[in-house]
Image (cartoon, rainbow, N blue to C red):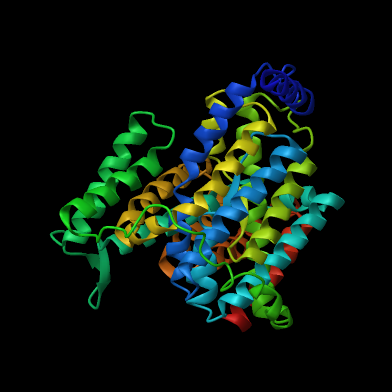
Length: 443
């Protein structure tokens, strides 16, 4: 009886996900889903650390992170049927915490409301097809610069959390005391994580965090956790907090915040979908079938994540690890979603995931994102100058929004001076007006 039920389940999965047509099996998809989860599981601990700097309850954010990832991955797997998992995005969580809340002084509840609205706008743009026009309007080199700049910003945060970079009255920043136990632990973490990655371990960042935390506990730098498994922490501190602040969104400052969230999520998602789809062989004549469903799944995840209590949820490039393990259908994403749900029972481990433990993940994720620098045409100054200012302004002004604004401000000016004003999309000129107003009235 049990075997017949298993056979029926396999047949149903084959029919729904198209396993045979994709040349894969249930076992292969399960392995792919587990591989993707291990490659991105670090976000479970890194995201609460980042958002916790805003005053949000870390345990609640942990649960929100896991559930948002599960929701997004499940919708992607069941609806769009792609082996692409989602979770709160790196860079977007840094923008949420360090720029919106800590620099702009916007309450985290209002920032969550802005995240929710950005998800709604993303959904509308995906449904109506306007997304394509906006994507095409932003110069390609500025898209590359945005990704690379966010990578440098994240790495800077990691270096600061590790105590490798510290504040200096004479030079603004300087080298920290590398003999501090916490800093030595972070340096060990960078080396061991890099070793895993260089050796080709798919979950290298996650394994690196485990080894770093274990080393911290063994050496006494980190206190041992009270347990490993426990009841699920309460989601009450963050759940639905966004709805109480919807009325505070009608300001020019929040308009910039929402547009920035939308902008970054737009290109982060598009880039991830194209990269993973190309790796898996999904592209048809350069286009992705069911692309609108994939984009809408991303927007639904962002809205759901904001309600739960976390920053923008987006598609993860780590899904390529699962694809490399053979995943070809949405069943892999469903497996990843199930693992994220199970992870909510391991909240006691948050106690050993200190800033020194997450710092190596931030630094090395920054390395991955900075590779986009190689795609910028540095020989053409009308491209290179806006791109450089985008990249440099993010860590130096401690703001992703400022970096994007610098690029969108300089690009049309330099193209006009070059005599190439016709090559600038009208939407880009409109964005120039928006960022000019931002510099004049909102800085």
